[in-house]
Image 1 (cartoon, rainbow, N blue to C red):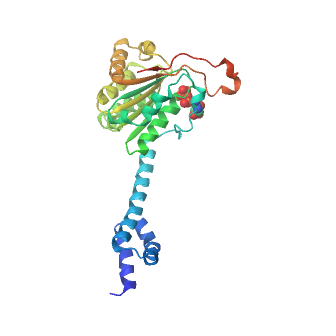
Image 2 (cartoon, rainbow, N blue to C red; image 1 turned 60 degrees about the vertical axis):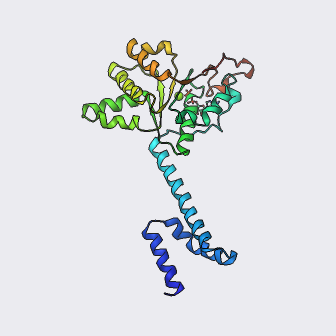
Amino acid sequence: MNEASSYQRLREHLTYLKLDTAAENLSPELDRATKEKLSATQVLERLLELEVEATQARRQRGRLRWARYPVHKTLADFDFDFQPNLDRKVVAELSTLRFVEDHRNVILLGPPGVGKTHLAIALGVAATEAGYRTYFTSASDLAQTLQAAHLEGLAQLKLRTYTQPSLLVIDELGYLPLDQASANWIFQVVSRRYDRGSVILTSNRGFSDWGQVFADQVVAGAIVDRLLHDATVLNIRGHSYRMRAHQEPTTRKGGPAVIR
Ligand code: ADP
Ligand code: MG
């Protein structure tokens, strides 16, 4: 077989095997190999490396889409100077994602606008980019979705959405009061994840208010108990970032932000 038909067959093989990036780069990489006198091993290695990189990027995009973050946030665009009481060392520790590896939880507490959701998404996105499966939901969406699935006899199936990811972000606990069924679904998810997978939870209510949030002191206690086991709690007692234009820098204040 001559060189031209070998090349043609090779391209077809790559396309048949869905190694599209390698197929697209075949011609330029072979030209480069001739110019730079590369060995067959080097050409193959380079071509497959391009394919691997493309596959990794595609999977990462797939995981991010699946995780359903409402917006994209990163730790790099979080202004720590605006929240002087937030211990950036603790956040830096969390950004190593060891808490995901160790199945530990992160609880972000504080009034509206202090960046709880921002930090939760940023950590979640970082974990997703590092290869972990993650999922974002609000507390009320989680409860409503599971209750709806339950009425169709599909609760066990739907629970997997919340139990299988390595990291589950539960946002906005406490903004809306939860009924008993909702409280039960949150308990189901939290207790099934206990010691098996991480939860990042954000709430504008302190633990002492959770009895009211869940309309049930006992369930609230059981949820707090499981969540707090080996958790990092960041209590952000600063000002709302949304309102920053309306405030004098000198009036910014707040208490200590970290309990570990
Ligand atoms: P919370 O969840 O605590 O109510 P958010 O995380 O939704 O607050 O923050 C409100 C808005 O302000 C978001 O757009 C967020 O990205 C931004 N924001 C909050 N804190 C900071 C900060 N320290 N640096 C940069 N952006 C911030
Ligand atoms: Mg929020």
